[in-house]
Length: 159
Image (cartoon, rainbow, N blue to C red; front, top):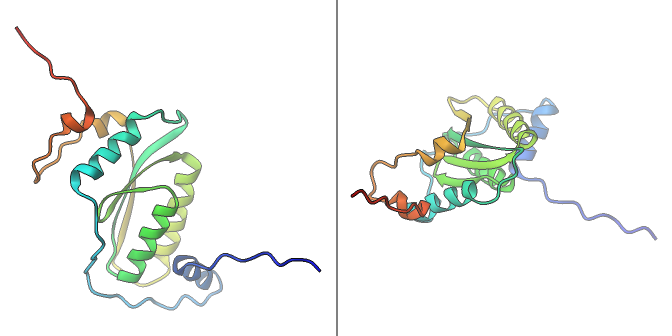
């Protein structure tokens, strides 16, 4: 007797994509603009971001930010879960950072473009490649955070 392979459950995002491909792309209902996801502290998120770029990176990888403005809570949560499964790290509520291959980045762009086309919306999603030097030159405005401590920069003393 042959054993049956256990199938993975289909995620909401995947279900939406399959319905669209089958010509059954009914519009998602747009919910409130509230996103109550808990985030680690800003210091922890920035520290994680710099750990990504300062550790031994694969030289064929690229760093990029994924930023979005999505009205529907259901769609936004599905996109968040998708990005996390793809290895992206949440920097702010609507900004993720990834250090992955160009192929993974291309697949993420294509999947997000397909999700964007699934329903009537005024949403936007941006995928922005960025160099390590630009990430290191980042400025944080609004909260008092010492980037030198996070980056482990040594102070320079002038005589």
